Length: 562
Picture 1 (cartoon, helix red, strand yellow):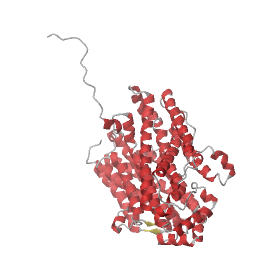
Picture 2 (cartoon, one colour):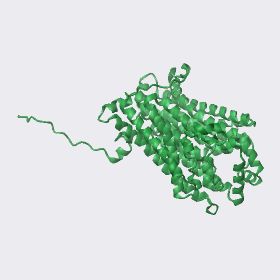
Picture 3 (cartoon, one colour):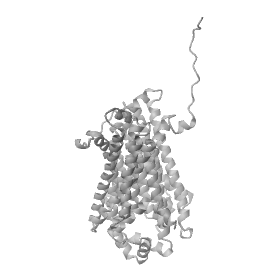
Picture 4 (cartoon, one colour):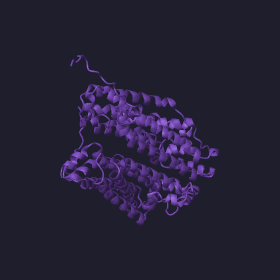
């Protein structure tokens, strides 16, 4: 039988569906979008939840013209040290002006920290692990890898800011009073979201540009210091002349007069920020393209103690992996708690001077004295604390689940390590990480209230129920990961925390049924910052944490490993 010589027939090249190219495994861009879905969900939910909660609280507390005048008087007379924690006070007697002054910088800090963490590790951490070597050896060039990963983060940031702009407009329309100037136009909502996004990307671009040279940790440290330090320096520069020169280097200071929710626009101030972002992004792409993969010169920092590196058994390994992230979340929460606690006394004294405002707060927050340090923390820290530490639990649970998602679990199970022991060891490490966050946050509260000269013990111990709430949220993630699949364990915790936060914050002012409010687990914890614990609620948190871990370990024995 004759055989014709010639080139073999090539089949038609398979085409990747458009959906897979945008989300999934059809491209580097799509996989990066998929891998960052938990971070996007956390940031978008956190920003949107805080915006709606702020709209609701302001609309309820300041419903009369007299209360608006009182509010402006209070803000005009508060100490300069407290003013430095917030933004530029413009039209603070309106909903948009008050939210811009009180919460505006925190929106930028939250989005900025996300951008710093994402862009510092997008390329540097994968290069160090060696996961980019195979990709770089394929027809994808290093420059294309960098551009697609960068485009994925820009897409996530754009979607998060679009969500924030929508909720900014809708929240003002739902809770504000047009007759008192509370309406925020579309231009104002878009302008605020654009400002938040640019501030965040400016910080992230610093990390992106430095990471190819100094590695992820050092790049994140420098960018994070510029973000938080720039915010603080810009805020205090008006009252501390020595800070005016370094404040000129901060993008917070460049855009200080752009307060779109208050009706004040300074669009040209955003241009230098955008130029800086483009330049640093270009530096990062070119540096990654021309330098060897993983070749960095890290800035020297103190090494982790050997006892904490996690080399003694599966629990020690898992805890060692979770510890740096727990310390980072705990430190951030502690700094926020310390700043709030330290300002509690001066702010409470100013509230007490205004009879109308004092009456409003007394009516709205029954059961505790808002003028005490613990009462002020219950108002300003507790609800945010529930959400922040709950989202930290989502990140820690996601790390626990990553053993299976990244394919390491099969190797671990090949050793003398059963599925139940792996699940329990990793779960105990996550709960240990939550305990670390709680202890560090307690330290921050103690420092703050001690500086304010108020009762230290009660609000410090009040952080414990907040930590138990996070442990319960983690228990839900353990159960979902064990019974179903670990790829959705972290997301399930994030969704639970965000939904709980929104129910707890929105149900009372909207006069929703009590049974609906009781669906929020945080509604059963009591008022811990003023010493009013709910024993049943705290016991339920412990039961959910332990039961979820045991249920997840049992579920791991009854399903295939992905």
